Image 1 (cartoon, helix red, strand yellow):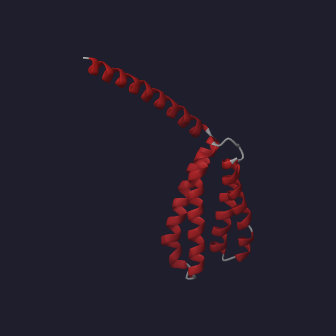
Image 2 (tube, rainbow, N blue to C red):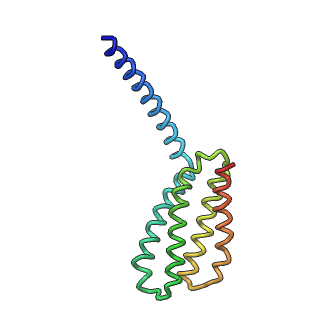
Image 3 (cartoon, helix red, strand yellow):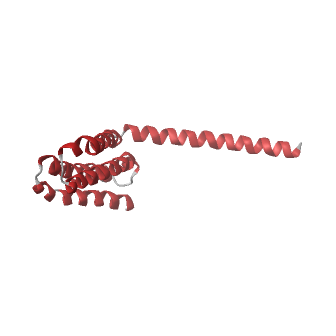
Length: 143
């Protein structure tokens, strides 16, 4: 019976910890989903998937230059990766992370999308500004 009692006590402690962990996760999920950066990140992620699919299927029919297709792929890849990070930016201790990631996505990937769609290399001048914003977002997570 002593062994049985210890098992029951351990099970009760585990159940209490499960409830605490579940409550904590629910609180974090609520906080994340209430943030505008959660919503922006989710919409941005959906757009990244759609634009990536467009590049892989629709764009390949109208653009022959393989370099431009690579540029589009880079834009879509960075767009999707940073959209996922944007979802978690409300957890950052620095509130600047969300704005940096959101603006970085728009400037970096947006300028590359425009460069390809309009066949205008001049949009490439905006890309490094977006890249710096993305780097700033990552650094803000480290501080």
